[in-house]
Length: 398
Image (cartoon, rainbow, N blue to C red; front, top):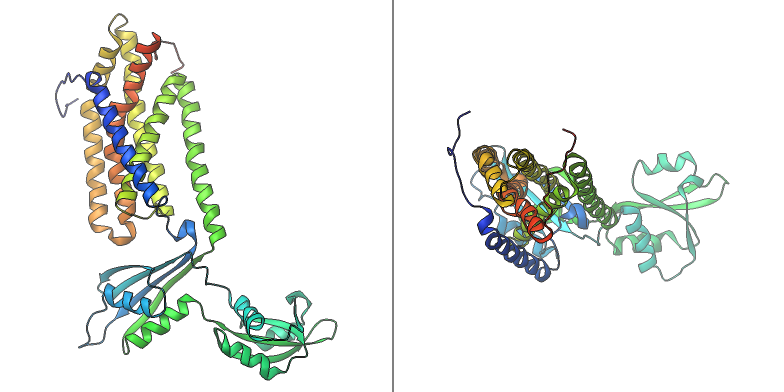
């Protein structure tokens, strides 16, 4: 086999304390950044909110829509803290607006109900559940959002209440329950942040063709559940890794590998915090990918360590580990470089949508390669020096 570096004899373990100290400093800086930022910068996937993707085509002779112009529009409707990402394609400007923690968003039915609670002095009304209404009610509302109420409040007062609140195209209709009781149907369209933004853009950019490509909403409760599930998935993955390596090698190998993985994730998370990059579901996928990539490198080194311990039974343990790393160094560098080339292409040509994903992989590959040499393996040497027990000397199933 052709070796990329030829035969090497680098003393990795002789400098292990220097590199482990360096890793500790980098992790500490990342943790300080996380504390100063109040934790990771979660996307709407985990915090809840609204994501609107638009495509805008400017008419001939009109200036192009820029990020600053869009931010100006958002400021006018009190959404200035939203995030704006723009890319240009042959079809026009692609705009992605993310409104985090959009507690203002409510379903249209909730907005209609809130308009009554806020703008009607009399509390002489009650909402009737939909399952008690006749089919004719749903035909009359023609798919519009509505609530049905029993009340003696005049219809004109109810209509005024709807108009005063953020309800568009309000209407008052009549219906009845399955029991034959008369009800008032209040219909309309809730004016949430999405509709507010679209109206504001249409006002600020008259004549421009504005097309909605997608509108995604994530409630705060769902976002919190996704965040917990993502953390749980990572912890379960780490636990299964320890169990597998315990069975395949020895318990210490599993512990060393997981410590190295924690090292990789913490450094990557710290860099994301320093650069103020978002943690989205896509980035969590990248984190799990780098866990697998880093683990692959570590297992290859551990396997060679186990082979060399049997081969050089009387040799110094640190030297055996150095030999094992040097044996695999050419393969490790070639694998990392080829993977890095693909990730760099993704980073430069993947656009804003894949930018954070590519950064996570880019950092993870570099840190994962480093940790398999300077973190996972030195833990075995430290253990042997402190306890006199050599990991990897026991016979395991192959």
